[in-house]
Amino acid sequence: MPLVCLADFQVHAQKHLSKTTWDFIEGAADEGFTRDENIAAFKKIHLRPRYLRDVSKVDTKTTIQGEEISAPICIAPTGFHCLAWPDGELSTARAAQEAGICYITSTYASCALEDIVTSAPRGLRWFQLYVQPDRLLNKQLIRKAESLGFKALVITVDAPTIGNRRHDFRNQLDLKMNLLLKEFQSLKERNSIPHLQRSSIDPSICWNDLSWFQGITHLPIILKGILTKEDAELAVKHNVHGIIVSNHGGRQLDEVPASIDALTEVVTAVKGKIEVYLDGGIRTGNDVLKALALGAKCIFLGRPILWGLAYKGEHGVQEVLNILKKEFHTAMTLSGCRSVAEINRDLVQFPRL
Ligand code: FNR
Image (cartoon, protein in one colour):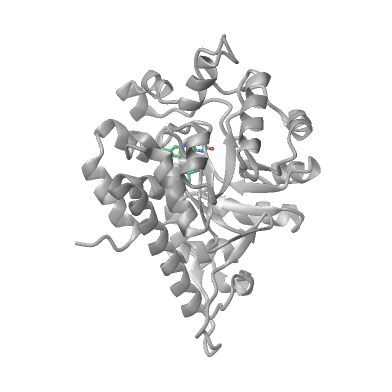
């Protein structure tokens, strides 16, 4: 039977991946409340379609940070793609290039950055950084991403430490994962960071440190993991170029709101000064439409990309992206939106509970 929606790819992935890999991908922090809420919250928002508007031509194209993408549907950073498919991130990069969308490559990619770029030289990519305790290492990673043509630096702020992922503790996953980090291995082998034993995340990073990053790179900086108006205002004040409203797919602090529920607060706080994006729980074209109606410029997909990889590598990711793009196109058509610019707040309502 053909796979016709993103949920079908999830069912397939669960059947075909090892338990340890499935648990790692699907898992969340603590009791998984936020991961489930990310999905449930979309279903509490209703659509308000408009009719008789000549929708014979519908255009899903848009831009992020000035770059054109074929639809506001891009790929969130997730680590260790080789767990889901042998050539991992190389397949993901090719599928993203083919789809004409942006792929945020993780610090924890299981392929080296140069190989990812070689596999899809024309693709639009941003580099995601888990800030490392060693400043020199951060600098090397950023310089490398810059020289390889990555177009933005995404700093993940919701992970000063890794959340309590009970399934990974049970599966004793930690050490094995570090061995998969090609970028870190190559830095170690080239002896540029001789004392580097394993990757880690700097818990001391704070707002004042942003100027250090702004001083060493010309790339626009995007903060990933903002959930409150207070932090959104600080982000604008510190001259970052964008915010990804995200709770890390429920993998960090559990019991925070669904991303879609935090979006309005952040969008209102930034007052249109910078672009706001969203990830977490996007599974259908209607979800994409709702996120845009509430002010997201674009959405990012985490787990569904890994399900696509687990299905058929590059072609599986392409199928996931094509299905979601098609659903989004249909959602736009059925609600009377001819262009992404026509999607606005009037398209959604929150029913009284
Ligand atoms: C992630 N996420 C993540 N985020 C990040 O900034 N750097 C990373 O390396 C990773 N790695 C990662 C691995 C896996 C297996 C998952 C599921 C997630 C979080 C990711 O970017 C995104 O915020 C969520 O996955 C979005 O939620 P959905 O689409 O998975 O519901």
